[in-house]
Amino acid sequence: MTSAPPVETCRTDSGQARPPEQPDRGPGPGPAWAGLRTLAGQLRPQRGRMVAGVGLGLLGSLLGLAQPMAAKQVMDLVGRGQPAAGPMVILSVLVVAGGLLAGLGHYVLDCSAESIVCTARRRLAHLLPRLRVPVIEGTEPGDLIARVTSDTVLLRRAAPQAVSAAVNGTLITVATIVMMGLLDGVLLSVALTVIAFVGLVVIVVTPHIGRATRHTQEAVGRLGAGLERTLGALRTVKAAGAEPHATAALRRAAEYARRTGVRAAAWEAVSATLSAVVLQVCFLVVLGVGGARVASGAIGVSTLVAFLLYLFALAPRIGQLVEGVGHLQIGAAAAVRIREAEALEAEEVGSTEPTGAERRDDEATAASRRPSGSYERHRRPATVAFQHVRFAYRPELPPTHQHVTFTVPAGGMTALVGPSGAGKTTVFALIERFYEPDAGRVLLDGRDVRQWPLAELRAAIGYVEQDATVLAGTLRDNLILGAADATDEQIAAVLGLTRLDTMTARLPHGLDTQVGHRGSRLSGGERQRIAIARALLRRPRLLLLDEATSQLDAANEAALRDTITDTARHTTVLVIAHRLSTVTTADRILVMETGRIRALGTHTELLTHDSLYAELASTQLIGPGRRHSSKAPLPEC
Image (cartoon, rainbow, N blue to C red):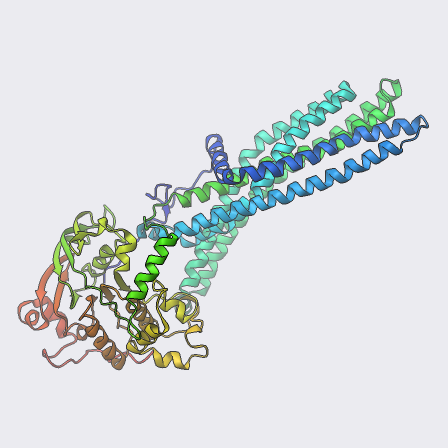
């Protein structure tokens, strides 16, 4: 069997491979602004709700801004011995109303954040299953999972609240400064000096926060990729005694993530600490200068108290502004990673949500071709043709196919045989359009597969891979994958054909039994039969079987071979076989060698006229009529 050669594990936005050893140096000033523009694009669909949330928060802050003036008025009235009940009521209303409006604005922003995250996740969930196979093979699945999970969490935490903090922090800071200037210009000049220093800190530190955050998220993606690799091959790791090696690799990834996280936290701490220290110094200086001005009679005590109240209100606003800018950088880094995932090359498979009319048509069509107790659709079998196909997995590698030309007529069974690496599995990959030929054409029913809508093309094909993939979930979920309209009678018929009915009968919950991660609760033979049943349930016009009986015992293999022979009467069956017993009854056999079609004929003809086929047959056959495997048949799994 021909397998795809390894490809680079890193790709650019366009999906082109890049050497994995080239580290991302992170966003400089230019990329930082590009990241903010990307973040703005993520937030744009919720701009109306965000404006409402920011507006409510801003109104609450403005009511809070009026509180020191109300407090000054109360102190002045009390100092003159006059009643202050009215101003006290006003002050109380300002406090309560400001708090309520701020809380409501926070809630509206949180709702918009959840919508932003949900939208990003839905886009990625729509995209990732549609990524082209070469892109998937060049990308770490764990890193893609991290972009859907942890990066979107950062987007949720950093985006709307950070925008609110930046907007409200800026406006309220300006308004507070204006109010402080109305009270006393000298004290304001002291405060402005401190504010300028804080602004310098923000300008210097913010790019480092964004760069460190992006490196942290990339490290988390590498850790996720390492976990996915280890857990996806856990039995192999255990059988090889490689737990220490796997553990060491995960520890290194976790340690790298810790170091990058500490670096990001350090820059955030520098920003927060400098801002806090400077503001404390500002308070002490203002208190000293203000006390001197009160003593000299330049200002009154109530003015100093009001100014200090504004300063107390200004300190958290400046901290909020600094934090908001930092979170915008974090959100921008997350948005860039999400955009990179969205820029990966995907297949055009059409909408997954049909209109009402299309849904009714689909249901009527499905009902019309749903014979009771049978899996056949009586759809006409497909024809397949390769015309001078040349294909290489990468330009620098030798071609896997070299001018491959053959025709498979409608109906019957055609077998592909040949040594490992001859290009047999690549034939299936090109028919399914997992890859596209570099030259030549692949035809289905005389039509280039590149001209077929992908959904229509693959709906006509049933494909059983050699590793018999089974997904986590129930047995029923796996059987109706791609055949959601299948009835219980059709499922029962297919279970009988693939000899899964006895297995299902002894399961505790029948078809609703959980099969475990990648079918871990099933034997290899059971997984293989489930994959075949799933393909048959789709009633394909073309059935592709990649050594689909390799893990079956002799009895089940013979029964399933009879089922495939029966299926070939109304479906075109193309099978890759390493067991010659699978192909002795084939209508025609294609012999492949080093990416070319070497010979075509029946089993008897090829034994006589093709030396390579005769050599392959000699390892499993003695004479054309007596099948003696050189290996004992695999036991029932």
